[in-house]
Image (cartoon, rainbow, N blue to C red; front, side):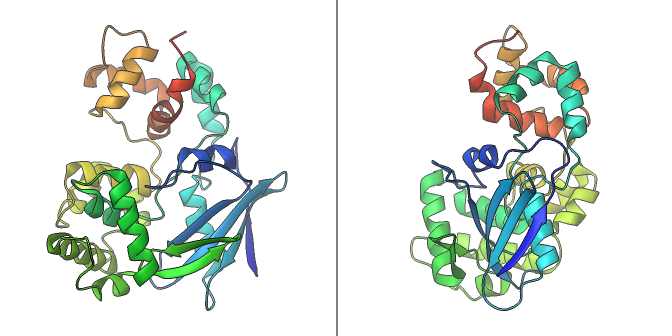
Amino acid sequence: MTTFTLRPTGAFSLRESAQFGFGPRHATAFDGTMRLAFCVDDLVHQVGVAVTQDAGGVHGEIVGPGAPPVAQVAAQTARMLSLDVDARGYEAVAARDPVVARVLAAAAGLRPPLFHSPYEAAAWCVLSLRWNTRQAAAVRDRLAREHGLPVEVAGVAMAAFPTPEQLLAVSAFEGVPPVKIERLHGVARAAAEGLLSAEEIRRADPEEAMARLRRIPGIGPFSASLIVLRASGVCDVSVEEEPRLAAIVGRLYGLPGPATAADMRRIGESWRPFRTWVGVLLRAASNRVPQAA
C-alpha cells in the first residue's frame, strides 16, 4: 500500500471539503474518508486515493495497478484540496473584512475543492452542456466504469475517468450524441498537446489562459472560466459577472440589489490575494449566515 502525507499551512477541514462536493459530484455524508478516483496529471496512470485527516496532517492512501508516480499523485491531491497554498493570508482577509470573517467562521477550514484536473473539468463541461447535473454525472460515471479504471477506494467501488488515449478510442457511447463524442475527442487531444496543463494555466494571465481554452471545440467563455477558476488552483482571480455570487454579495454587504461589476471590484479589493477563494466561500457557505453584520 502506497501512502503520502500533506501538512496544511493554515486552517483546513477535510470534512468541509468532502461535504462541499467534488467537481460535479456532491457528497451527502462524511465518514472520515474522502474517496477520490482520477486520471493522474501525467495522463497515463489512473488511481484511487483514500484521504483522511488527523493531528499529524492529511494522509492519502493510493490504490490502483502498476507503480503510480507517488509524488505526482500527492501534488495533484494537494492541488485538488487547495493544500498547495499557504492559507495563513486567508485568515488575514477575514481579519479585515467582517463579512468574510462571519462566513469563514461558519465554515471553518473550508478551502475550494477543485476538479481532479483541467482535463477532467473540460470533459465535464462538454458532457454537461445542455444537460442537467444528474444526467451528466450519470453518463460521466458510466463512461469511467466502462472505459476508465474501476477501483475500490476504502471499501467503495469507484472508477477513474479515461485517459486521453482511452477516450480517443471511444467512437460511440450510448446516450451521448456524436457531436459530444467529437468534442470529448477534442478535449483529449488538447490534453495530450499540453493545453490543459494545470501548471501552465495557473502560471498564465487568467484572460490569456481562458482565450487559449476557448480554442478547444465545445469550450465557451463559461467553460473556460470554470476550468481556470475551479481546476487550475488559482487563488486571486476576480469574479465579477457571476449572477449568483453578485446576489450573495449584494445581500451580505447590504447593497440595494445584486452587486454590480464595479461593486465586485471595489469590495473584492479587501479579498486580495484570495479573491477566487472568497468567491467560492460565499457561494458555498453564505446560506449559513442569515444577514449582513
